[in-house]
Amino acid sequence: MVDFGSNLKKMRLQEGLTQQQLADRLGVTKSVVSYYELQERYPSPEVLTKLASVFHVTADYLLGLDKKETIDLSGLDEEDIITVKRLVASLRYKNSKNK
Image (cartoon, rainbow, N blue to C red; front, side, top):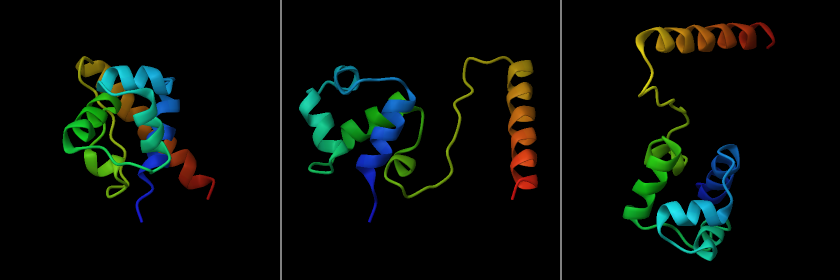
């Protein structure tokens, strides 16, 4: 089963958001965000779309259907994008050596 609640909480904390801050961005109450994280409720398609936008991920990633995390590079110039890609390649190489 998909652990949507844990994924949501992890991403919220990584972004440094409180439940209230996330609720404000979504147009829901803090208790609704808490219900999502506890898996007592699931978001509507509209809220799921807003969540994906807030965290710059796909709905599939949020739901645990896609394990690949993406990075939103919009707003970066070509040189910045090249730098990010090189950093990712370097980290992958480092991690492959540590296995």
